[in-house]
Figure (cartoon, one colour):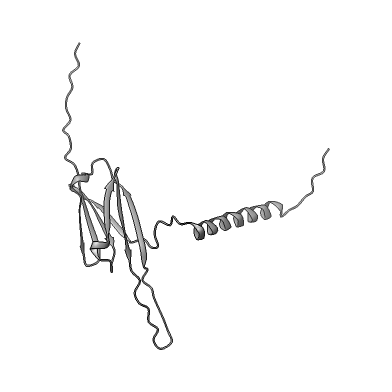
Length: 146
């Protein structure tokens, strides 16, 4: 018979070590990764109407010429960059709440989306993307020969 040493906190200590290792790996990967997808993520509303899908993305302070919207293989991608503003210190305080840097969002579109007719416009800092739906193919009755 083999004697096993009883350690009442052994399992809990092992769990703590495993979790520490998991978070250390993630933190190192985040710092050393050159594949960061975005510095900030714009808020997005997605709406489906009878004839189209509509995406409204809050991107204030970004010139519409600097926003890249493209569709490839059923994936709609929105990316761009908001430049940082010059920060000033006045009367001993500084406060910067708006995020800046690059942004990147991707959306899978259904097969009913008509990629050829997608349109985008920017109005008051909101990017409005309209994705029309394709006309449905009418069901066809197929006769069975005997």
